[in-house]
Image 1 (tube, rainbow, N blue to C red):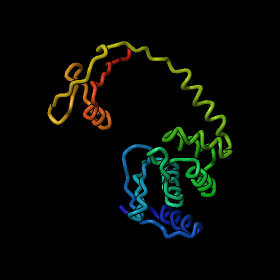
Image 2 (tube, helix red, strand yellow):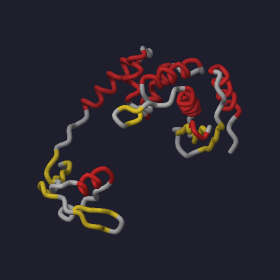
Image 3 (tube, one colour):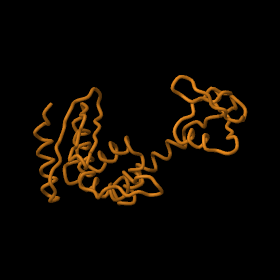
Image 4 (tube, helix red, strand yellow):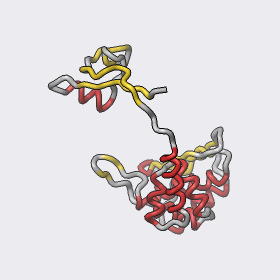
Length: 198
């Protein structure tokens, strides 16, 4: 599907203002209200899967353009800082400059990335302090889960179950970093299986 004219015009305007070459824009529609996007700087590509909400489409395109204009994410303690303060300084400036109110930008951005509220407060975005306070209040009002032990603490002994490595005692899959850690451990690694009490 070809990109809508407004999206091409917005992309060209933002890149011209910033003095950078525009990426190639791929545009597809998706079911549902919300849009998603990805920017692949190395491939010179930006892709948007557009939902039905036109305001969210615009924010998603501007969000991806903020990635295009921002300096590449630096690594901190082995992890990439993808949506940090520097990124949000660019993003909120683009939102404002291209027709989104601070209230809409906060609402739509924080629905995807809650950390955006903290960065918005630090950047002085209007309404961010109240939005962050409301979010924290909602979290505090949630009922606390009560946990109970389902399988008591035990040493992990691995066996294959099809393509998965599982603990012999509790039958839980062990994957990724935990699997590597258990395989290279010189002493038995122990764990306990918990469940939320009903």
